[in-house]
Length: 456
Ligand SMILES: Cc1ncc(COP(=O)(O)O)c(C=O)c1O
Image (cartoon, rainbow, N blue to C red; front, side, top):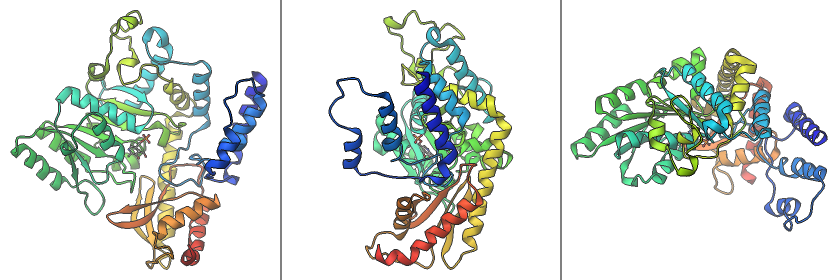
């Protein structure tokens, strides 16, 4: 076990130390990967060293490396080493944070971590939390709690709300007709005027407004909805305010982010994803709910076969706070991270990303012959498009083509998206290991593909 374990540590540390020389993303062909990793069901024991070789040489070499300093696509996952150690420990000890009886220690870590996050987000004292697999599940958990408290009704999202919110609502049984999509303004923020009109309309028609889902850092542009105004409207009309800060909310811990994200602590429920900007490996999204006891009111189960697992007064059975019964010990990695680095170091890391994104914005505006900035650096995200407009030979969007060529080269990964009908390239810079050179060279390599577009 030790020899194999040490091999694994060496492989992971080699990856972490040398990742900037390796591809940011590499996608394999289904046939080749199936032939390397598939085959008949292995009925007999195999050689564990060969297992390690296949994992590291075939499986893990064909993936996106969200922790790569030049991985700027979608939302990166710049996990830190302390978090990886925490995750290994939790897995090594096979932590299951379900009942108090069976996990009082790890459950305490989760209570402590949720309370630290609550304090960092400026939420009130008695706010309760739970850590689930990611932002999608965290918002579903929060929205289910909202419906438990307020009953069914109309939900308001914006045209920039992450797709997981609609999916979560539909999975919970909300009729599609009860989901209103409010247009955003020129800065891609939910229009408070349009929202007020929609709420008035629904009230006038005898329908019950239930909840507004505001976004604190949209996936497309990093825009933050006007949360204080939305909170006022929610208060006046008895609506629940859910804030999806899956990627953006962690920036609240630095002064610049606190200003940008003003009002997120007014939320009835707030989601933030440690596996995005709190430097955790994938698989950690946190739901914070302002109303004590509501998570348990929404999710508690009490079958006879779980009657002897504890759960009196301050003994929390975490299986009562979400849809999961058996639960990974996800707080272990976050607790390890916070205790190891401290909040100040994390603040500095986030602040560095905010500054790097501004640097990228400056480089783009300095190249008006190639690029036009579409949305400025907001919470680490900026978007831009080719200047002048160019058509590709295939008629496909050139920005998608450029992003694909760059990913194929492995040097860096960026994504493309569409903003109010306009195709753009998008950088999401949330990895503090990224350097200015990484940004310069990524932009240069993208520009170098432009003359070749006519052949794509
Ligand atoms: C704003 C926002 N909400 C929700 C999600 C979904 O989070 P997850 O992929 O962890 O389920 C994302 C993912 O990028 C996001 O950016």
